[in-house]
Image (cartoon, rainbow, N blue to C red; front, side, top):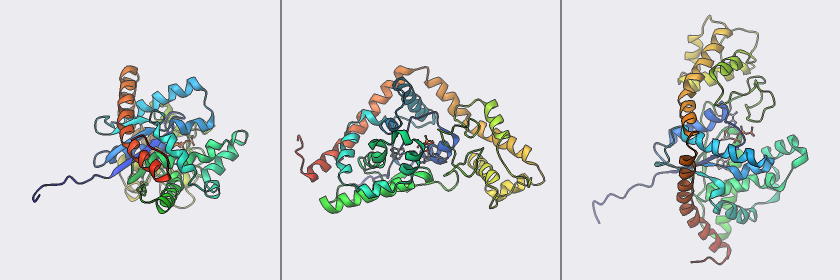
Length: 338
Ligand code: ATP
Ligand code: LTN
């Protein structure tokens, strides 16, 4: 049929975040903000990775609350549940099922090399469970089920994307083309927001020092206080340079909020001290996240809407995931129902 316009397949984007606490501005600038941008031109799926969170043994009532809070957070970013599929991972059964199949196509040695596994097993030496070890395989299942083209994450997740590709490639080579190989999408600035108290370490949700991380739902006063006490250096000059980790980090955060490059930031603060600069960074962050905070407060008052939207999201995701799961099951020799 001539002249018939075939709709082009838009790239599929998938990402997820664990409901382990309120997100930090590291999660926001490293991952969530890119989700917002990408949702305009791609077919996007965003998930609350609650199965992954089980690896750290959260208290059940607390986890249930945090899953809802994270789901509301995703909606409050302005990600529309009509245009994107926004769901809770454990509500789509195919994830756990494909993860088992992929476990059997993942080598012990390659999982053992994962930096996050090594870090977390050191930090939680009393709870090095098999789930923690198989964590990247479940993450691979999340991605491969939807034949995702791009996966927007912070820089710390790059290695997990590489293993997802390796697992997919091994499976495809052994059993025939089944999975699309995903590409990471890592933003240039904001991919690694550092701790305000130790700018050589990444800002983390689980940092024990409450001044180290700024959370998305911190009050403006608290955000101001945290930035004012951020660790810097003694040079008193706002410029991006090696060895100025604290200032480099504040400049990156300011750049994420304003879109200004480092040259422009240096000019803006020429002759000004760190005190002024810190206040401006804090104000920019407060402004940037204000709409998210307002929408979150509104959504958390409507649990029925959140649950209904989560159920609809899971149904839509399940339909897509089921197709890939059936294909993979057939390829490995399992009997499928239809
Ligand atoms: P935890 O501190 O509990 O290990 P986390 O803060 O690393 O958790 P995750 O849920 O593991 O959070 O990650 C969610 C997303 O945020 C991922 O895409 C991750 O790459 C990104 N991310 C996490 N921390 C940072 C950071 N400091 N800078 C930029 N991106 C980050
Ligand atoms: N491990 C990820 C969270 C995650 C994820 C995913 C990210 C779970 N499944 C699939 C991208 C795609 C993290 O951010 N720490």
